[in-house]
Length: 131
Image (cartoon, rainbow, N blue to C red; front, side):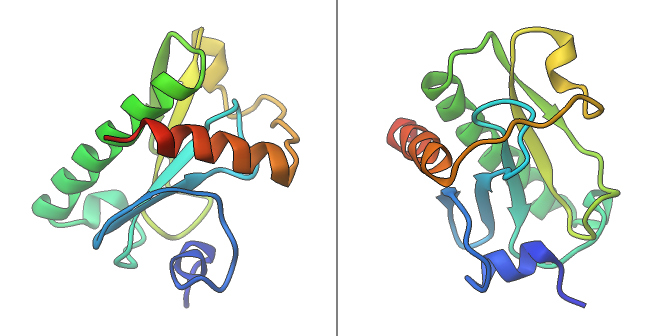
């Protein structure tokens, strides 16, 4: 069964894309912990991140690094936190979250409520920082 991420990849569900290549897609989380909270996914539908073959997993990490460095330039923060939970959606993904303290990456915290316009502006700022 296709996950919501597979539908985003196919363009069946809109998203605020940040970066994309043949193998990966990065887009803003619509229920973010912080402005700039981005999800990185492989385009290949695989449920568990550690089921990715070594080459795909390494490529995903490198892709995530480029996206994280762009987020860091676009969104005021001390660092970009990285989290892999893997329980909420059956499609491997990495969370890239701008953080200023350890509490900023607490998934139990209330999520931000950002408008579509705000998300579009943040995505554009991040895209403008990609090299």
